[in-house]
Length: 120
Image (cartoon, rainbow, N blue to C red; front, side, top):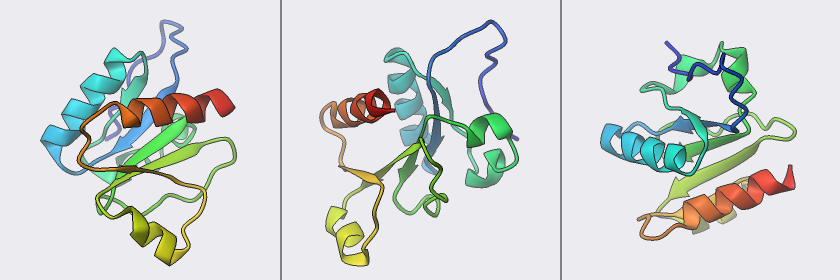
């Protein structure tokens, strides 16, 4: 089941789809992103939001490397991959994703997310 936040109160914060299998990391990232002003859906299973139209329309998808396959690119939606092997994506020729290296020791995820959303 999708855990998308209830936005019926007219909340217009950008929706971030967080696909992270590791529960402590997922909840820490959710807290951090919500503190930064984003609306976050963070299902425990990557397939939970596949049929949810709102979740498919998320402004950005953040994926922990290995948690889920990269989603099909959607025009206007950014994808951020959290990984400890950024060069692997270059070797594989993966394009149109932003890579943020783990461990997350600073605010690089927040900076990248803000920059990507400012472009769209």
